[in-house]
Length: 171
Image (cartoon, rainbow, N blue to C red; front, side):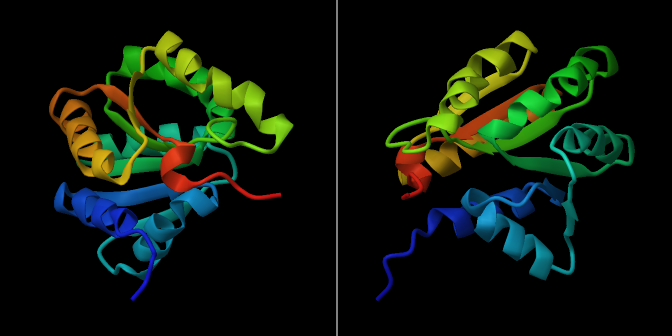
């Protein structure tokens, strides 16, 4: 019997059932299952980014091409996206992003606190709707709501995956 959480696999299945075919990411342990499953899925496109803001542009392009994308990033990458997030209001495209949190519950790396604590206010200041999942039971209903908000209502929505959920890195 394994103690591995099942929510990451359930989350991937949810995204694929919602016709998300493009998975944009900067490598991150918090998104390991999503990244690996998208790499192994012949019907998905897994796109490694050199910086997180490229994922905002990729989401715009996916929407223009009639596809759905998700941007996977760590909270430290949110600061890299501020300028590109300003395009969403003017260009009116949906954005779904899943953000693994740092500088949160149980964080042991002092360098992660500034952006980790600024993530939610920065996203809200840029007009992004912010939802949060801190327990395995929160993930599927929260991301389901985000999918509806992003792809049916054309909103920019971020789901913060808290460190209570993903676990704090040990140093």
